[in-house]
Length: 208
Image 1 (cartoon, helix red, strand yellow):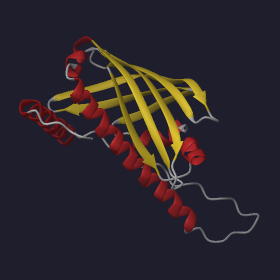
Image 2 (cartoon, one colour):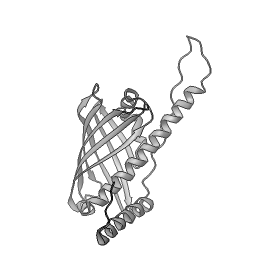
Image 3 (cartoon, rainbow, N blue to C red):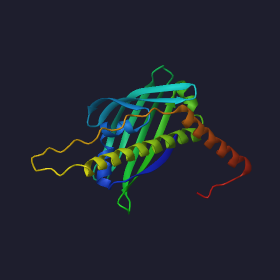
Image 4 (cartoon, rainbow, N blue to C red):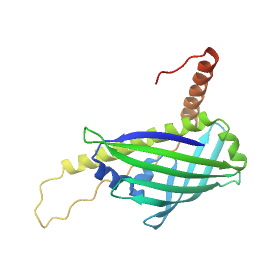
């Protein structure tokens, strides 16, 4: 299944690219994600935990940059993982590109091709539900990333003037990864599914 998402980063495109390709820096911003090993500058290992109602899934696997255009600000990431209880796996190709906005910020466009296998695939029968989950996660990631950028700017702004021999202070640590809330995420996804059903039942169309 394929779906697209986008979000805005409140910094210029070059700075946004440097942030988003620093996996160690941004991993804590993704709900339920944990970076477990940095193999090299393009390959990583980690795990992602998701709870939807009574069902808890933990995918452990690896990801790597297959294509990376630093000048064009675009990349492709290939990720694969298996559920820790042997209920199946997930494989994804994620293409993203950064587009400079007129106000000096950056728009990030993401296109995901996701394949589920094993019993885990039953949760992907409704493409709309998977898209809703992806949108919720991207929104939360964007919020956490914004908080991190604001915190780093605040630390820079409050730095006392220093002499040439003073070493620059390190940026504040990234916020700890927040677990994915099964109740709030599941409720939101269910509500969106009901809205889609009602639109189909009564022939309601969205003009976008």
